[in-house]
Amino acid sequence: MTVPYEAIYPGPWKDSTTFSPAVRCGEWLLISGMTAVDENRNIVGVGDMAAQARYIYKKIGAVLAAAGAGFEHVVETVDYVVTLEGYDKTAEVRRELFKGPPYPAATGVVVAGLVRPQALIEIKATARIPRPSL
Amino acid sequence: MTVPYEAIYPGPWKDSTTFSPAVRCGEWLLISGMTAVDENRNIVGVGDMAAQARYIYKKIGAVLAAAGAGFEHVVETVDYVVTLEGYDKTAEVRRELFKGPPYPAATGVVVAGLVRPQALIEIKATARIPRPSL
Amino acid sequence: MTVPYEAIYPGPWKDSTTFSPAVRCGEWLLISGMTAVDENRNIVGVGDMAAQARYIYKKIGAVLAAAGAGFEHVVETVDYVVTLEGYDKTAEVRRELFKGPPYPAATGVVVAGLVRPQALIEIKATARIPRPSL
Image 1: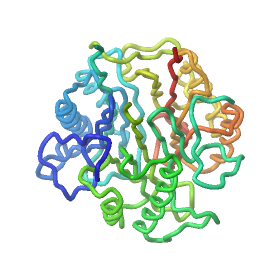
Image 2 (image 1 turned 45 degrees about the vertical axis):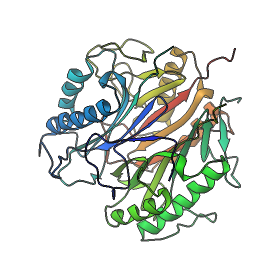
Image 3 (image 1 turned 135 degrees about the vertical axis):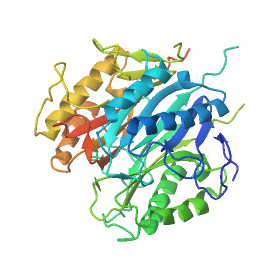
């Protein structure tokens, strides 16, 4: 189907997957919710939410790079966690990557589960990449 | 109240409802989370998540049509499911409607409940309808 | 880090916090999910979801005002509630503030928990503040 957006793939992606890792439309980059699953479909950082967050942000960084952007373009995140245990430690990962203030807007809620077994956190992000002014 | 957006109604809508099915602002169409509730307030596809997803997308299609758009304009979805049982089967519905790749971005989480009893899935969608270039 | 957005602070804000209450980019104002926590970190409206919603919207109103906007600019909300008990009563708060129809788009789901103990509801909002046409 001809679509008015560009799918962003930071690496190999199966055609059978019914979503894109990210979609760019205009100045916006909408990044799908990600868990700490590696290319072999294993969770990185089993039992350690901060380690999972770090790996997720590494994946988000790859998506941003594929769109010609960086962490400074992230304007909003939503964290879905399965427990509050260890959630406070993910702040350190944000501190390192976003180097704020300022920081993106953020929302965090505890969900009843995530699609991936052993995933403790899923992060959805939105970035905005302004067009260069002429 | 005078608002800088347009509410989109695909059919009759009660004035007492405190949200709009969708809101168009500029090139964006923000579609409220929907469950498989029909016009008589009954759930379509009781016990069958894929059937519910199909009905929800039918409703989303009606909203898109009311805004002069189609499924090709959907850029992002968020699925809130009450169980993972049957969730994989909703991919087939996406395949039929979006005819990708490419596909919209997507996020899916398991929630503790939905407002409608018997609802197994709620889908929130965002579309972008580019203005024709002059 | 130099960022292509403006963080909006409606009042004092700790530099160590790794998110902004809201972020403005272009015509968009992305407001972080908020609970009914007051400046002393106590929940307002313990056990009363509508009271919590009212306080949250007061906080959202302060963010909107800090961005030069008002409730008429809110285009979308997402409610995360920990129970359905009392959720219907939050509609009255929306009715008072948004004075619709029309109303913003809205999504509401039951989550397994919120970060703040005693919080019954968290509300995330998006506003769009059109630039004056020349």
